[in-house]
Length: 202
Image 1 (cartoon, rainbow, N blue to C red):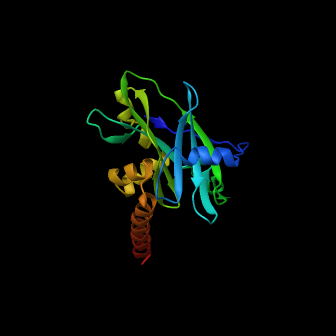
Image 2: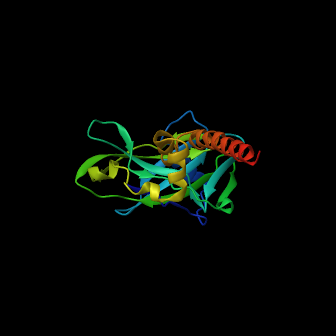
Image 3: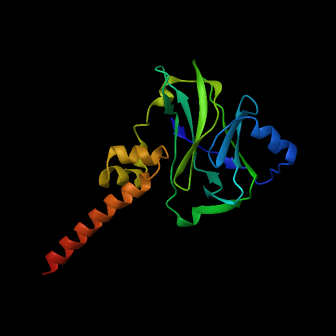
């Protein structure tokens, strides 16, 4: 398992014919339609289609969507094969408006392994989760395993220490409210530390 490294294509421009074609790719009642297409043997194209009549805020980190890749495991369950690594720099976080019927494009790598399966992408935006259509692909079974050294990343070590291993998984795998749960735990810890310091001075 590794981090997702998608990159928003700032040069991408859609026209009415493209919108019509993409709209037929996947049907959803959600405000965002997440469409997956295989560009070639090394890249997937993922399109974010605003189906509403209003502009939508699309969040990003250093021009990367909050996106990870998932695959079906040997039991037919959807499981992450990538995780998200949040930046410690506040200036990394941006948001742009996607106009009604607008489409944003990003790209992400294609994996190849000895286990044939189905692939889809998961997007976290404005604390809502969206899933793409699925496509056939192949991975190695080890890609379902969380790296042993993930907590060497200081931010994730802090989340596991002050929160829990379960909260860390929620953060890594782009679950709604994952960061909120950690911040609540961290606030409790900081208040306790402040009380201890205050008592020690008295």
